[in-house]
Length: 255
Image (cartoon, rainbow, N blue to C red):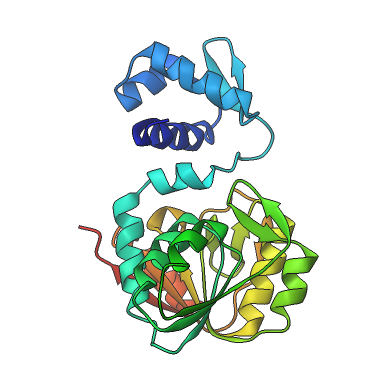
């Protein structure tokens, strides 16, 4: 599947979050033919992400979670800017906890020349980190979660309890002031909460579209003090709200 198709599939899922969408409307929105949209919807329906209707489609159940590949295809410029800004916060010799997610994957790829110890459940990062000459890698075992190519569950948590770190760097499906970060799965947020506990400092990487987003129903509260790295699409009001909630807000310039 081409990167263009992956991005369109991810954006289709986002559009469907608003409810039932007409095929012709989607075709106009993405500047493709109606037949292309029908093929996309047929592909998504095979994975049970959407249910086809007469003339359109609706999401099945709660908001469908995009795969790691789909997330990497969306807002690549913003992700790279956030990753670069976050990399400047890391010091050689740090022990880092990295969770799963496309923005964390982009961040991890910028660390290959650094001297670090990295503890992670992010399996997509391992082929890159393994080439780094001065990075010690600790992989958290557990059950495989294929949508994010990560491990989770009691085995991952048991291993993590034996290790502490300078910084935890993580992503989220959404961030809400006063509530925390949300994900699709309770096991995800349980592991994220433990990552926060085991690290001296928390850094959350979230593009502007994640701020205030509450579409998933599993939540992890944030500590009193933490760092948010977002992009310049975040409004002044969004930045101020998180700063009031205890975050140090760093804005990466994506332009």
